[in-house]
Length: 129
Image: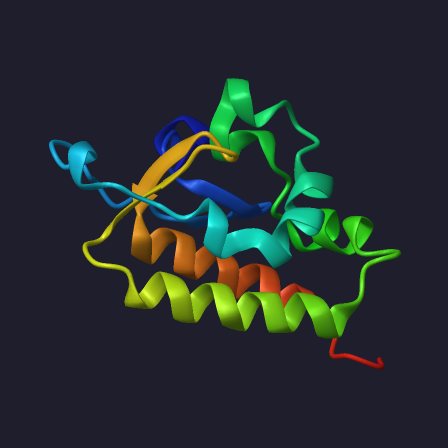
């Protein structure tokens, strides 16, 4: 597959993607998630290196393992792991499966965001490491 084939997928590595799940026709069902992501914004803001979210949505972020590692200095892994756990619990409990993030400028299927958060959390070293 080419990068063009991944137009709506989320890039998480050189040849690794979180595949898009179509939400066409369900945009009005979207639930805002920004408040549930509060503890992750310090990291997410540092990952916004490819463009700005206002322009490119998820494509503005470097979600690769290397990009995440470069964004971590000065952030506390324990706090990020706790924020991940809180965000995933909150998102999983939300009604429906379409989410909206104004800060990340994106509408997506909830399962895509949960996979993205799982990937990000797996890139953060254990607390104290």
